[in-house]
Length: 177
Image 1: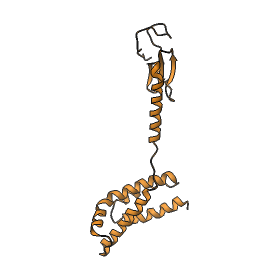
Image 2: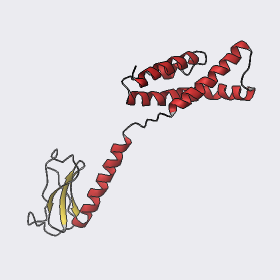
Image 3: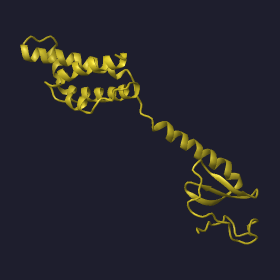
Image 4: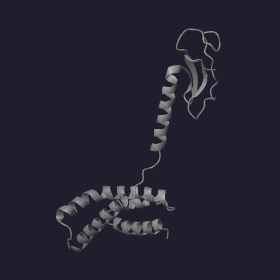
């Protein structure tokens, strides 16, 4: 059995001696701190970290702090999805299609500076936007897009086909077709 150190050397009211009552390991509550004994000046508290003696005045503060911490942890575990990433996919994918059209035909639609910027940014921005949009689609539909959509969007000549296929598939799924 673990020993719990008392905050003071005075006799403990529950035992009548300087020894603090202990609780066996594995019996700690998971719903937050459980007050096993409270005599008004000191309390024996059991939670997921173990059993300990705390000042009764600290009891309310400690329990509310742990509750707030647990609530923050629960809210941050949910994935953040945003439907606006789809507009980024459409924008970058559409501009990239124009760049590839200009590079393959020699008929440049976009200025050279925009083409150069897209050549640098697309291999990072396009996969990022597709990945974030697949998280939104998976959270809001029955389709869970495979990571292959993101990987395919990295490669310059393949990503145009990935773009059109992804947009069409996403449209069908999100409309429920």
